[in-house]
Length: 201
Image (cartoon, rainbow, N blue to C red; front, side, top):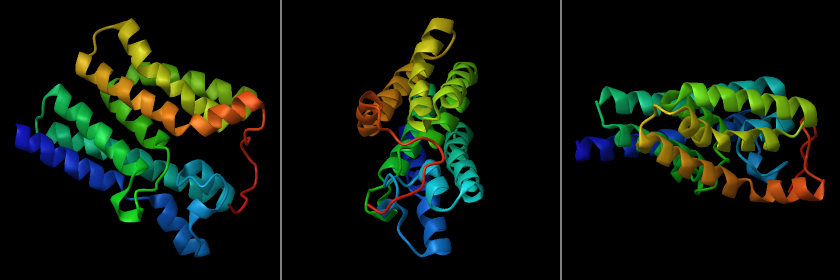
């Protein structure tokens, strides 16, 4: 079981390391997305650089990474810990991709997928809060940060494995750390709103 867990985590990390925003931007504009807009290799920055259509495509693929990673772990019949850690590894791959110099995105889309696979109801509640925040403020980063509530909601609702809650809490801390510059700009009132154009770094 330990060996299978390690194999699952490695597969999840390698899968997560596939940066679809980087690949798509290279194919379409022949540029490195990490040199434009926020410098983040993710769906939101893809929208700034390529437009809404490609961004939705990237979003779907990034979500699929998290889903597939957890499904592989489940196919291996791993323990709750093994499944949760495999999901975490997929997110780590997105954030620090081995194929792209360990400089990736913030992992929000993949995180949402992993959270949905581990605890769908708390994730759905967090998603509703996120959508409301984005609709009211147009700050994608603020909506993304709403997902840190997922393990808290899961703990409040009860019935979820402690392994899932603990790993989800670690993921939530990772989201906060990756959004530290966004949090600073939100406090200062100069965070980029949805629909803003990309600028070269």
